[in-house]
Length: 542
Image (tube, rainbow, N blue to C red; front, side):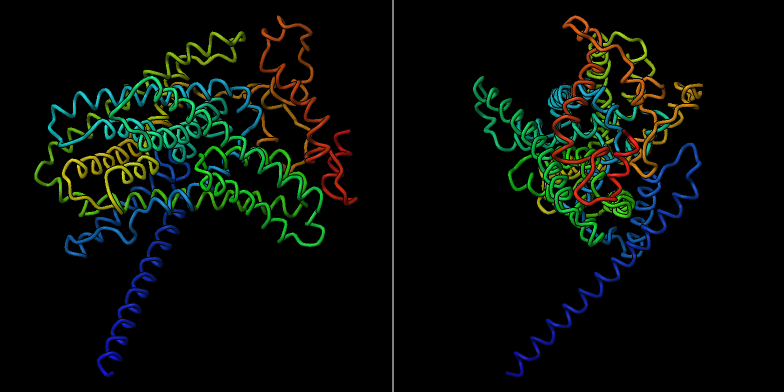
């Protein structure tokens, strides 16, 4: 009996010690997050640095300090977790991007974005897979099968859309931001879907039927994920429009909007779809309908809440990756062959450069063929920036690499360890080096000179609407609400082919005004409750 009591007491003491160490770790991590925000603010005007690189460098520096104090035993206070990344950190970032994105700019370039994000990712994956298959065998990395090489292609074809948010400015370079970030979202979704498909198929018996099945599965996931996001966004708009919860409680209204947004992501995961695509399109639909159905105070609260959650999650990810990069357990397995690890990292960086160039320039040429106006075509300088800005690799690549080559972040096989350390090296080098060079490259190739129309353009809209509805889209007056209406309306198929994007946009607006907004609300329609913000907007727009 005494022995049992002492055993229970010792276990409680161990739990208490463990809880205390967790509290210490979280205190340190939160303090580092605060430091990243303060330092990022101080370096805001710096032409080289941005918050993602700042957080990454602070994470690496902290990892070095912890490594020294622990006597070389550990370098992190938190272990990288796929669940933490995919379930808690990634959704607010992608949702806020869809919520704040300039919708007209995004859909005007939708076909180009899809070319880059879907077809481009497949091309990049193929180039990286073929290159790695040929070169890694000569480096004698270890036993890697066909599934591993295909997974390597999917892992390193995944661009870092989070870092893109930091290095490109939506107001200064709206076209580039729309193309690179839109491509990044579709690219991440494509890479994850491709990675999951590679893991689910038997690659020892590849034939035409498996290839068709793979293509059909990919298209199903892509379309189903998009539709789920749209339907969830429309459902939230309908509920809030009919119930108008904000007339009684702003807190409930804000909570419902935020939970419906997160629900879209979790539903996608529940049905084995792409949560990235789902939550992105849910954000677009919510900004178009749901956001205009809530009260004025809820608008301000939701806009800043989504932006704040996204910002903190971005900083958290880069700090997290930076601290975990020096984990001694990952590097001790490659200590006998550091040259092989360096060579593998160099090969992967070269293949990333080559794989991205293999689709950016050819697909840009194809995209330009379909555009009649010279202003809509992607210039060679813009193509260079698009190629460069998408070279960064981040937490998506690390999460997929851990999934393929480790169990719970640990591995005892040298080949797997080399792939993990190579992934870490690629993420650090690409984020810091390529990220540091992106802003100066944009200033060099595309010096910003405000257009006279850009300075005088005024869009008649409510001042509290998201910035996607209050700023010019392409840096010229042609994309404002007024100018799109004044474009010649084609009355024939020939005219439709001559101005496809503006025609489709006009037809969508007619359908939206006639059928969608009366049901789901949005700007310009009166809700059930008189005197609401939406009613005032409707009076302004009539």
